[in-house]
Image (cartoon, rainbow, N blue to C red; front, side):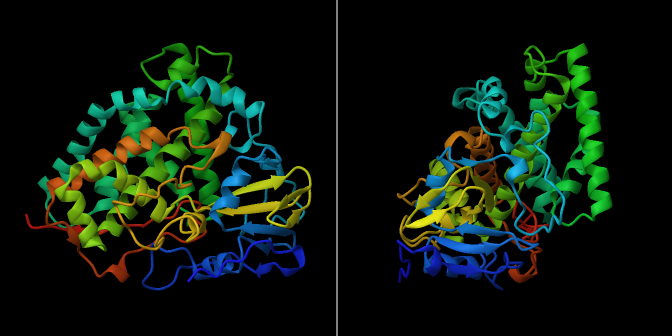
Length: 409
């Protein structure tokens, strides 16, 4: 039953005291109960950030989408707070040059525009043959080694990692160490000192890579960008954004998506029986899982939404995973249905910051899921489902740490 009520006043808003630290036992694909409960009370809730600063949490589909398209809400890093970090008296600095995801127009547009032509639907489709080969190589190695296997390390991580490394022009001999550095600062579990060290090492490596592309351009996106007016520092920042958007998100969609399919054998069978279903299956998995769980915005002026006045300077948490499970937008939203007709998820965001690499991610997932279920028709979990290790909610991207699988060799 849909219990959502709209038109709440500021005084009547539901309050969420802390961002959830865990999902409900046995429900690794569903948003935390506290957030779905908040949405039932209405699409906007109060939230107090660590350290006591007041904010708002938006959990309903229509309002999340509305805020994402509204220029009165800013993406600037220096106006943001992380939902689970107490900043104390520290002032958040502006985004470094090139990290356009954390900027507003016109700065955002300046960085995004030269990239837009590199990630068109047509160009990403041209990459399909190479992605098919990368996927086949990973599956060949899995088959040769034999069961059991960790699908994360054998399949989910290598495919997007190799693709993004080739797009950036990372030399083959550097890829393993480069991927380890990136994983260390994106997994949500690395200690502060190790995280800073990994982040710094990645930044240093990207600076060296940019310099190398300036001196000796090759056939890759980063080399193409060296022909623009962007500085080395800006190119390093852009490279970091492409890494963050193109590696961790797709890797976790492949692993968590496979886990979801294995837990829904009827849907897995439908995909195996009809490979043409892959495109719709990817869209449904994106909606159902929403691995990029939350994003932030800050009101630049007073804004009224659904009867609630959001004052200038208010930090707003946008809950993608509850928006994509909103019963006012999707029929039976908690059901994984690969033949779903009511699409339009927000997994890639919306508005001017909508994910630049979404077409690449779609191609990677369509190719990878189709090839996996075709190559291993008896694929199944090698451990009980409740023993599959999940990433903590503190990780910006949700997923599994490892996914032990087996099959009939």
